[in-house]
Amino acid sequence: MDAMLPGVVFVISMIVMVKGADWFLDSAEKIGRALGMSAFIIGAVIIGLGTSFPELLVAIFAMLKGETEIVVANAVGSNVTNILLIIGVAALIARRMVVSKNLIDFDLPILAISTTIFVGAIFDGKVTFWEAIILIITYAIYFLSTLFFKEDEPVSEDIKAEYKEREEKEKERISTKVVVILLVGLAGLLLGAKFLIDSVIDLSVLYNISPAIISITAVAIGTSLPELIVSVKAARAGKAELAIGNIFGSNSFNALMVVGVPALFATVIVDETTLKIGMPVMIAATLLFVVAGISRRIYAWEGAMFLMLYVLFIGKLFGLF
Image 1 (cartoon, one colour):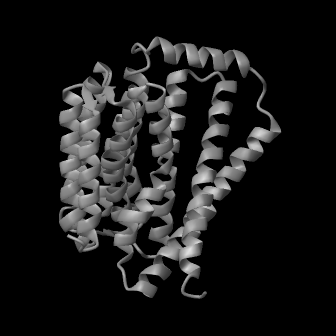
Image 2 (tube, rainbow, N blue to C red):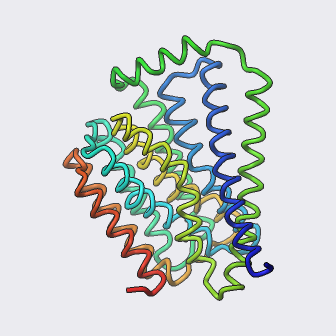
């Protein structure tokens, strides 16, 4: 039973963290509407940043435990998972995902630039304080540009109608229940992230597996579940723009903030597996995503190919191929 305990803690921590993220996002969205925030701000700021909270919290707790290798491994693994697994699944569900011109003009270059700067920072096997400053400033530029230059861009009629209907139904005051759920969700995120890192360290010792490998696979999948839920729901509803846009924002946040914030407090070390396997696959996945974005369509067969590449990635990490 003792040998099974870290695995049990890992699974429970992941469930608590994902459920906490769900409650936190739902409550934050209700509070945003009650405060009169626009549909775009709610989507870009609350939902966009909220889905990346698990990755950030995992990175912070990993840094506090001195396991800095987990930080970059989780960010790289999450970005690979977001593109190859989540977009792959979403494309299969939607059959064909059409990318809007706004995403091509703004988000696509930002993702390419973010990934390039991120790769430049981790290329030598570490992320220093000044590299962290560059990563965070880059994200600040992206975030401010999103707020001030995308606010007036046209939004599809179905999204406008959906938010208008929600606003009409939910013009109530911020209730105590909503605030309590928000706090409980945040507590779930914090506790889940803490015990998740503890269990990763225990599992790595127990099975003689690098914490970075566990992070780049199992932890990355778990922390990407909020993005998976959002993207799959959007794909089922025929809202490809939301499904794809969610991944653009999340990957930029992972590359710049999830690694940048912990590196402010200590030099973040990049493990050999992440450098030799994770980084090349992330670069390849991002290039494929950018090319698919330029063509403005992602078909089901492309989604299937993304999934096959993800299977190859996992196999290479564990020496199966």
